[in-house]
Structure formats: structure tokens, C-alpha cells
Picture 1: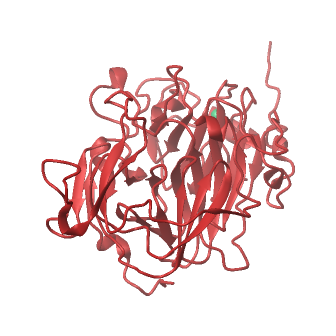
Picture 2 (picture 1 turned 180 degrees about the horizontal axis):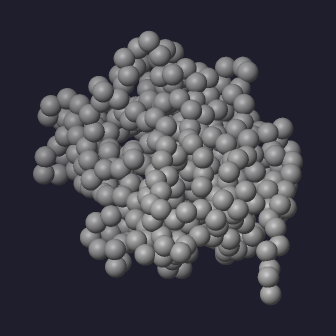
Length: 438
Ligand SMILES: [Fe+2]
């Protein structure tokens, strides 16, 4: 395991920039065939393999696939056997309850026993159906050990990882990504990876997206630029492991974990090209837009990535950030307004204070407001914001985010009975006073 004394990996890594680009990379010169994907003999004795995230026939604008050139074909593996993962669940959640109650949790404690990223995945809730490839699951991860002889791949969904505590060095089939709090990573569906902990411990959130891959939202009247700009999404360059020893490969498939003992590292891709891989994004690059006149725009304006469905505008999942920004609205209640909404909202906090909650919503914690569950500022925030002097105000040093989804999130028993569940979240609105003067 690495320690904090070792040089920070971020300064050593190269990336290729551009969301959804047709990237290409080779760790050894000449490893990437030119002019064709599957030559009779691939360069350097490598095996050519296509890795798709969409059906071959999906429209060009949505199609995701990459060609990889690897030391052994992925097919060279033994049988997978099911292994226990009692805290990692999928939709439909066994014994799950669709519950109208609003919930809020403190940050989960780090494990007392050594636990790697996979061991430390704990499901808060899920919706849709994992085998139908719709819906999402929401997990916390808590880890205290790097994965060294163990690898993970998720056939059930792509993984949007939001670190809150500690950085992650993600060794993927497509290369390495260094990700720290404030940044996010997306691991494409069925991409194999292992997680190293440069800080020795890590905690954060995962949106496991069963549905269509995350993409950038349309901009409409905003124009050609703004929100998350494509050039700020960073993809790894090819980096391979040439290991001939027994390692465990764990895959999540059909809601369960399965393991197989390989005699080599599955991260043996020497070159690749395509648009299905893994990528990272620094939320500090998000171009936050907002009102310059009055009223608070709907928070969809803060969407970084969206997983669309067949119903236009109803996302399987939206990833939304509440990043540092100026508030300048005149004659406007500036924090998020009170609302009830068809979409279900899971929120987390990476750092600082969220502007609708004066206290109780803590870094590493979370809240869940399912469809049409009424919510908004707590009593203290309402009092302050409705009497504040409306000079320009910077909301700074904060990062809250939301996984918003079209269906209610059905919580797991573990999440409903967690010791870090706040017992009386409803009380934050109990102090909201009657002000009616009619
Ligand atoms: Fe909300």
C-alpha cells in the first residue's frame, strides 16, 4: 500500500482531453495498428479485441466502443463463482421499501477492519431493474486498503465515483486516473480496474448507472459553450500491467458479485483507441450559470452529466453540482426554493456548507428526497435569506452534488437502520414559522 509520503500521482500522469472523443493511445510505440482494427497479426504479438458499451447498431451519436490490443484476450479466464457481498445490493432491492419519508445520514464511519474499495461498497438504495438496464444504485464506498491482487469490473452499470475523503489512483484497462475530492471519475461499463489509496483511506459516493451511458446535456439557448465543457474531461493514456501470477477478478453481474482467479493481470492493454473507457472531471472547471436578474433558476442548470431515457428530459440519472458561485438576484429568495418534484433527489456533500441547510448536512453525509417529497431550506436558512441584504454574495469553498433520477430510490434495510441515519430529519422544517398577515 502506498502512503502519503509518496509523490502525488497527479503530477506524474498524462491524460487525453475531450469528452467522447475518438481517443487513441499506445504504451509501447507501434502497438496500435494503423488503418485497420483487426489486422491478420496485430503488432507486437498482441490480441485485438472490441469492447462495446452500446449495441453495434445504436445511432452514431450514442455509440460507444473501443478497440484494445492486449497481451492475452479477455476470453482467457476460468469460471466465475458467486461470492458474498451482503451490503452491495441492486434493483429491485430485496426487502426494499418505497418510502415517502425524507431521510438524512451523517457520514458513514471508515471500516475498522482492512477493507478495499469493493469490500467497502454499501448500498443506500436503488431503482429500476438491474437486468433491464434501467435505473441506478447509489452506494457509499469506504476503504482503508489498496487493491493490489484484486480487480473489479461492473457489468451491471457504469460507475460515477465522487470522492469525499482521500484521493484515488484508479488503475484501469485503459490506463491510470488520479482523482481527488472535488473531481469525479466515471468508469465505463465492464471496464476492469483496481483502486489504490494514495492517502491510505478513502470515502465517497458511487452512482451505479444501469442505463444509457452518461453524456453531456444539450445546451439549447445557452449556446455552444458553458456548463461542463467537453475539453475538461480527461481520459487515461494506455498503461499496462504485465503480471503472470494469481490475481482475483471480481465482477458485478446481475446484482451479485462473482470472482475468478486469473493467472495474469486483466489490465494488460498495451494500446487502445475508441470512445469507451474511463474518464475524470474536475468540478472546479464547471462553468456555473445563474440568474443576473431575478429568481432562482431550476437546478437542472447545474447538470454536469446526464444519462437519458427514451422519454425526453426524464433522466435515468443526472449528476448535478452545487459549486462555488455568485448570487446576485434582485428581490429574490436566493437559496433553493421550496419544492415538490416528480424526480427523486439524492444529495451528498464533498466539502463546506450547502446553501439550503444551515447545519446537519455534513461532508460525507447524504439526504434523500424521493418523488414529491416536500423539501427546501430549513427554518434558520429561511429566516436569514428572507431578511438578508441583497448585495452580491459569493458562495465559496463548498461542493454539494445531486444524483437526480426519474424513479423513487428504494432504500436498503442497512441504510434505513444505519447508526449514522439522523433520527429526526423532519424537525429541520418544524421551526418554519407562520408569517401570514392576511
Ligand atoms: Fe430538491
